[in-house]
Length: 418
Image 1: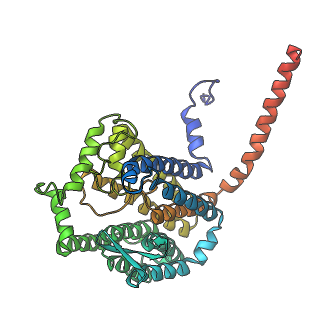
Image 2 (image 1 turned 180 degrees about the horizontal axis):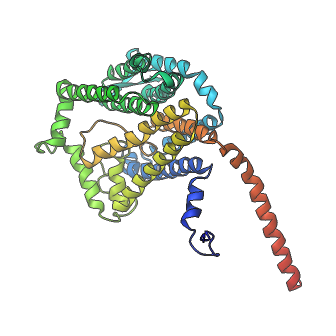
Image 3 (image 1 turned 60 degrees about the vertical axis):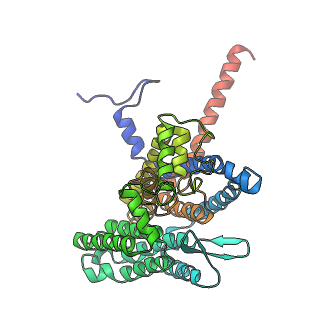
C-alpha cells in the first residue's frame, strides 16, 4: 500500500516535500538572490571593519573607505535591477557590441588615461572617475562566448567551429589584460573561457589541450616574468626567508586566520588590520573575516559561494536555451572561481596574484561589474520555464493569505464580543 507523504502540522516536511521545494520553478531565482545579498551585506560590514583604522590614520574618518564602497553597492544594485529586467534576447543581440566596447576600454590603459598601481597598469581615469576595464571585460566575454558558442552548439563537435571565432576573441581579451601585467585577472578570464567551453560541450580533447596550454602559459609567466612574481611563488611554496619582504603579506594573512580560532576575536577586534596586513580591506579581507568571525565565519562564506554556484548550476540544467546555459556557466566560473582563487591565496596554497573576493572586497569596478553580472543571471533565472508565472502569482497568493488571516481575526473578535 502506498505510504502517505503529508505531515501533520508542526512536523518536519518529508523528503517528498523538500524535493518539491527544490524542484520549484523559483528555486534558482531565490538561491542566487539570497546568497548574493548576504555576501554583499557581509562584505560591506567587513570593509567597514577592516578599513576603519587605516581610514582614521590617513583621512581622519573611519568611513573614508566604507562610504565609497556603499555608494558603489548602490550603483551596483541599480545595475543589477536593470540587468535582471532585460530580456534574454537583448544580451544575445548586443553581445558583439559589448565585447568590442570592452576591448576599446581595456586598450585605453595604454593611453594617457591609463593608471598604474601595484606593478599593474589596469585602470583608466578621467578627473575623479577611475574604472578597471578588465572587470567589464569579464562580463562582456562571458556574454559573447555564450552568443557565439550557443549559436553553433550543434557544430561544436568539429574543432574549427569550436575554435573560431571564440578562441581568437578569448586570446585578444587575455592578451589585452596581460599587456597591463595583470596575471590574476588573466587567470580569471581563462576560467570564464573554460566554463563556457565545458558547458557548450566542446570535445574533451580540445578542453584538455587548452587546459594544458593555459597552465603552461601561467607557469612561464610566473617563472620568466618579473622578479616580483618569482618572489611570490617562492614565498608560497618555499621557505619563508624574507619575513619583512616577499612573504610578509602571506605570513600576516595566515596569522590573521590562525588568531581567529573557532569563533573569532569579535567583530571589529582584528589586530592585523592595524596596518600590519597590506590590502586588509581588499585582496586579504578573508583573513580579517577569519580573524574576527573565526572558522565559523569563513565556513559560512564558503557555503554562501557554494549556494550561489548551486543556483547558477540549476539555471544551466533547467534552461533550454544554449546561450543562457553557456553564459551562466562562464559567469559562475568567474565569480565562484575567483572566490576560490582569492581564498587560496589567503590560506597560502596559491601565490599572491591580486584578485579581490567577489561581492566582499573593497573596489568599485569589481563590485559593480559583479552585481551587474548577477543581474544577468537573475534575468536568466526569471526566464526559466514556469518561473515568470510563479513570480507573478506570488502577490496574489500573499493577498489571499492576508485576507484569510484578516477574516479569521474578525471571527475571533466576534466570538469574544469585541
